Image (tube, rainbow, N blue to C red; front, side, top):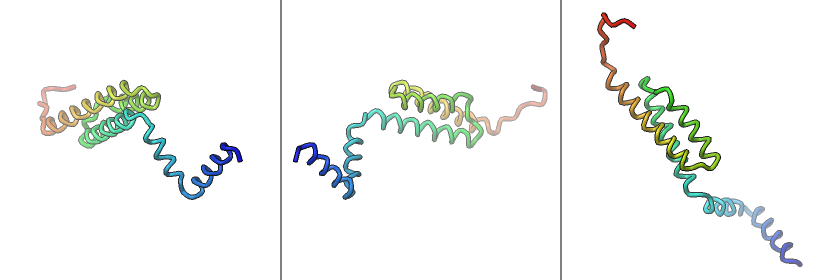
Length: 113
């Protein structure tokens, strides 16, 4: 038997016996560590956006920056994605803070807009 046939047989046996999880784990170890970090940062930004939205404090560009961060991460532009996600998270936190601080704000009747 040739070596390639032996390797093919061993690989097939490993796959059939449930060894696919092992092969996936090897792929995960070789993945870029920045990808996991960016995914976590985008998730934090999304959670902050939801928190701001829960008190009607979501600002205009927050969701747009999260969407752009996801697109940049998908394209492998991890530095750009991280920057956009952090910007979105900061804006979401500020929006939440603003909405909570102005919850009891009373606008005088002589101010009409």
